[in-house]
Each structure stands twice: as structure tokens, then as C-alpha cells.
Amino acid sequence: MFIPVMTAIRYTKVSEILARRIADGRYPLGALMPTEKELMVEFDTSRHTVRAALRQLQDAGLVVRRRGSGTIVKAKKAGAGFNQSLTSLEDLIYLAATTPRQLHTVKQVVVDVDLAQILGVGGGTRWLRFSSTRHGEDGNPIVWTDVYVDPQYSGIKKVVQETPDRLISELIEEKYGRRIVSVEQDITACAMPSSIAKILKVEPDTPGLFIRRQYRDAARDLVAASVSYHPAGRYTFSTTLIRQA
Image 1 (cartoon, helix red, strand yellow):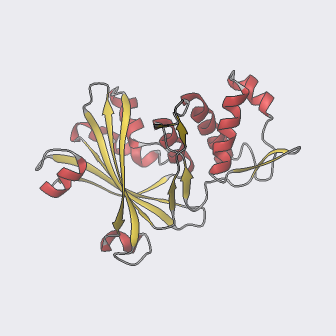
Image 2 (cartoon, one colour):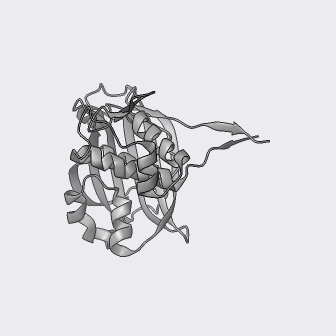
């Protein structure tokens, strides 16, 4: 039997903070990052946690680690495509921090039966839809995402526009106190819809990846849902499986 590795919340938080510092220029390009020991002291955590956080920065293309030289800042933003192991909500927060969204539209919609089935909501219900893209360091779009939020949370519209580096679900938590404890994620292959393909600069019906996420609170109530389209070659979903003794 195989089970997925669970990601410790602590290292993703450290990684998120360090990524923000790199983006803000606190750690300039080509500069050495603080040593593992210095980070252990600052964050009051273990060497294992610090190494996991630095490894995540390296996977995102933000730093390069050299034996005997330390950790060197390589880029201010993550590379053109995602190549991450997403095993916790904190990992999604980290991705949001390193690849800020570009908001295209905010619109109240009534979902039809087909979309309702995809999202896992009732047909004919009203939702506030945030449509956005995220871009790689080269400027090319790497994903189109529609996030559907209950209209009762419409008060987050302004803050969503002002904070492109934070998850919409995170902003709902902060403003309305709805604690999200789980994100259910389904990933399937797809053909790129023509309208989205044009924005992502690929041909219609070419291969892509479709991801649906459902954000739920402790009572299992749906707080938000999202659908994302990634063109082929611009997203890699990575997990590690360990044989259970």
C-alpha cells in the first residue's frame, strides 16, 4: 500500500516568507541567503524544516544551492511553469505569493447545469466569479483560473484587486472568519477551450491540464471553488509516494 507524503505546515510558511523577501528585493539577485543556522534561529525551527523550505524555493527556480557556497538568489519570481509538490493549502499560498495573478474580470454569474456539476454546486445558483491569469518570468501566461465565491463574500472584491499575491480563499478567511481546512483537488487532461486558448497563447483544442479545487471549512461546507486550465508543458504536478511498512 502506498500513501502520499504529508507536507509540514511549518516549512511552507518559512518558504512563503523567504519568497516574499526575494520578490521585495530584501535578498537581491546574486546575493547569498542567510545560512541554515541563521534561519533556524530566526524562525525557531529545525534544520530539517529550513532545508525543506529552501528546497521548495529551489524547485520554484528562485534560488540555487551550491555545496560550500550556500544558497544564492537566482530569480525574483518563479520560472515559466509550476513544478511543485502540492500537498497542503500552504503550498497553494506559496504559489500565489510567487506568481501573482492578473485579474481580468469580476462578475456575478448564474451557473448552468454542466458547470454546476463540475463545481459541485447547485444548478441555477448565483456565484461571484473572479477570472485571472498567472504569468511566468518570461511574461507568458501559464494558467487561466476562474474562482467562484458565494456572493455573500462580495466585500473581498477590492482587496482581491489590491493583493494579487494572496489566494482569494485566504482573503475570505481573513475578512469573514471562515476557516478553510481542506482543499479537494481533481486533475484531468483536457482540450483547451478556444476562448481560453487565445488568452493563453495556444491553439484551440490542444492538450492541456484541467484542475478543479473545492475549498471547504470544518463543517465540510463549500466556501469557494475554482477551475484552472494549464497549457501542455507549463505545469507539472509532483508528488512522492512512500511504501508503507
